[in-house]
Image (cartoon, rainbow, N blue to C red):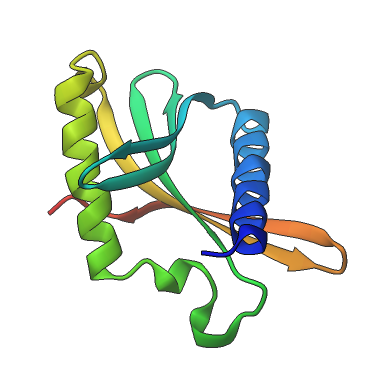
Length: 123
């Protein structure tokens, strides 16, 4: 990944964090990494929901935009990484887990964020 793409991705994640916080969520971690993969954002929503969020930023809506790019392989990596997180931090395992996608889209010099709650399940 080039430096420009990484910087754009980090900007998208920062926008997503700000958005989630404005919606009343408490962000507890960003870019959680282990050998299974990475989770972009980990947040809690009162009273008892743990949000595992994938941020997708696409400059164009071709092929369905950012949310459509969370395919079965990506979901599998997120699920495996989430299991690792819950084993490492058992206090989080007491919460209900929800997998969300935040689709960040540049629009007319601004960014539109589509928050897809419960985008996929851990089945």
